[in-house]
Image (cartoon, rainbow, N blue to C red; front, side, top):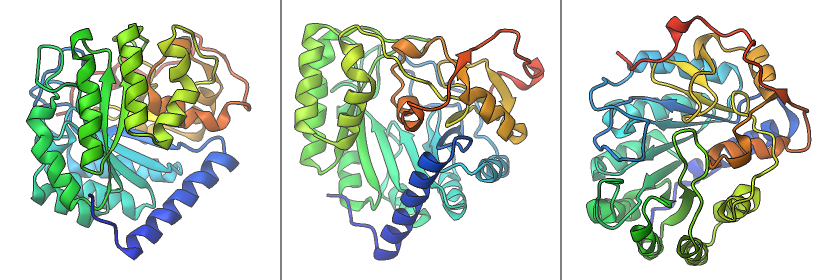
Length: 341
């Protein structure tokens, strides 16, 4: 079982949670979550992933701190450090501590391969509040290398030493023959006292790949093994429709309530819809947030990105949207694309 956080840490987490709730309910032009890529490099090469390379250096720490400063100035409630593989950034714990000092909720997403007791203790000391470990199958294959056999010992380390919440996330639909693996992964997480969640596989544009009857049955079983608010929320927000081939009617607030900041420092709608607004985060303003808040995204109906759904749910019944126009002014192309230096 993961260690309980100290009383002071629990109080700090409570205060951060209350600030998040206040911003979600009482504001519209405040980002609720920024996912920040700290390095594009990954130690794995999963066939379904398009969010990595095998050569980029970590984004310089001071540059990331400047980005955190600006996100804090916009009132951002929470930040997730991601990649690539964020544990390839040598100063990840320093970045966690820096963002916590700004009053943000701070989490990270990792494949878990580089986890050690030392890394866990460093992240404990920095005040990390949550970690998602991505595991898709029992043994690696050409589609996903994120396997239980490779990281089960790391999960045991997390169970024993982590003072932050740990969620094991599996992508449903990677390969049909691996469907039963998701159930075993959920059972393993439960045995270790860790939470488990399941996501739906998307294509290169973030859109749904439909589930088979076998996959639907496994999805239901996993939610029974690891019942949680996250499962309940995802199911009621969007997954129930998607797994049955039905679109969702919702207002996507990407670029406003949710920001995806790439390794080059540009804000995009999400990891799967890069290219707009593609504006440097250090130049991102309230006007940009208000524009994207009011912009309808044509990809929303079959989007499977749970983080965007979750951050958009607070504004479901407010704030009308208009279709995105290709004539909307875009930043100079020199600030988009590319890997970090």
